[in-house]
Length: 422
Image 1 (spheres, helix red, strand yellow):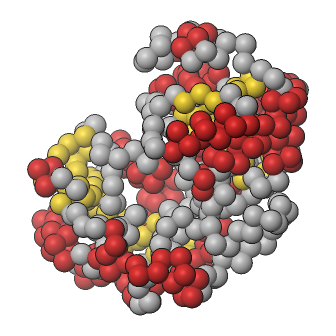
Image 2 (cartoon, one colour):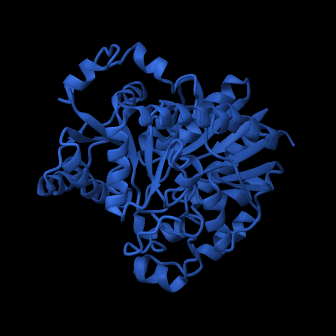
């Protein structure tokens, strides 16, 4: 089967959340023997054209414009659309699977795709079908309840107040027009489906993301570490970051206040009072926000270690030496791959109640679901797992079983293949 994938960013240019999800999906499809072509974009004119990466066929299209025009060009990007139309004609796919196309490829690609006469599906990985960026407006920081029935409906007036001159009053209407050209629309979580439906996007089904549990397993992490020649116990890795004899609380992914970076430092301020040897480890690409986090950590007297970007092998090893993994987002994080990565590595997770984490982390079984704005409750969940390692191990075993039963890459691919073929 010939499958054409549309995705704004893709490795090796970008290794973000959605990019890695689509990357792993494409690799698995190719391994099955499917003929897959990825159409993506680049902001470097010299990188435009066809490349191969890890055996995958990738066609990059040049697109670069100021973000102030995003609410308009993301609907129809004339240069990219003409290129996409020709690529579709030349490749002649059986199905076109669009993912994140909300910046460069543009939503009008859905119409071009459908007019080619093939099946068109779209997977929503975030709230961009009705929102402009990280969705936080529905959250009340003063309401620290956890069992919340959120109202995700966002008004034009709210978006105008937030985005001001960049607000396009016709954007969401036009997006919904282009969505009519999709045969199927999928969300990566039930919570995202609910948010889409409350914002007038109907006929949405759910396919959860998956992970390769043959690779994401403690047994693989023990075999070796590319940078530090890891052995059982992870001592070289711990020594490299001065983590020996520490209780490691690990946060993985981008930093920033929306990702709960401020909240987790406040939370760790309580944790250290009970567990003085606790340390917060941030495994993410170094960015400008790191300095701000260090300033806040110094203010609270919280020990924090930044590892910088880790490749997949190193990241698995970092999970393996951690005691607790945290996912404290204070925005609408639709799924949270960190949750299933940690659980696959048999680590307990304390995760946010906002977004899709509640569908992944089973509260009191594989970890805890807490409101990051309730810093004491979140901290007590971490403290309990650090003080009672047997409970942490039990949660870790349960978490691995839950991932194997519900969130494998194989299951994800099988579901998409059944859609492609029918």
